Length: 329
Image (tube, rainbow, N blue to C red):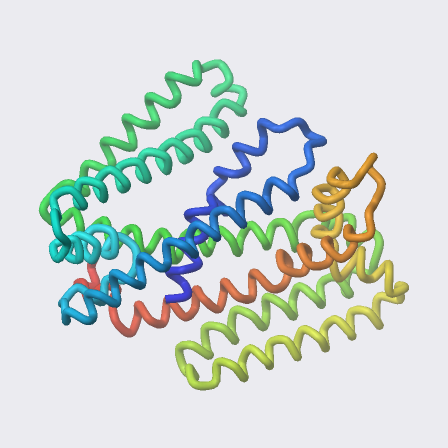
């Protein structure tokens, strides 16, 4: 459930899909982005929270009726099975199903618009793509998307669509999120970090993080699911030990170790996105706390949480194929 929820919020926010990056690329370079990012995130999540009441009301109603589709609580099953079933109990169901159809159509339309825009922006930023009219690129992308989506229109199309939606939302988006955090927090600025600090002190932190995260997350959910909390606790104990060992062996002051080893990469990125939001470019009092919170989440907490969600989703799908479908799907 948590993996589905995380995939859904990734999709609705456009995180790790290049959509917000493409939209933001139209801003001037010095434009403050923290306020815009917060407004988008809070607005989207508030709307999702409001919609949750409608979802729980419908699912609760179907449970009260003893409906066989009451278990359809997410993804396409909720939109195309649970909601239409509940509407059958309404007065004037034809009017309500028409409204639902309009809602789903407009949702699909603006989702397609954002995805086409993100892809077209990347293409037009290339030397070859910049020579092609943007309208032609959009036409080709829409035509290709229409052709490849036609496979969902067959009698087994809904099953295939449900499976594709599950594996893309749960696995691909979350995996992209982990990879992007890996690039921003561990690959970016690595060369500068090893110039400013002993290479071993930098490597110790990375080896302890990824060397403990992947084995502990997957082994705990597959072999010791009841001990998951203890595995998470062991992971963070390993990290604290690694931070202490790295700090001692680096020979740096606390401030230099924090910037150049513990938060290398994300500290520079945090400065780049936060200082333009300050008055006259001066660093405000909230900048360093923000950089620590944002950088720690990107470098340490987010990969930890999402990798554990990926491991849990994998274990669940291995134990019982998604939706009870034949494993070949």
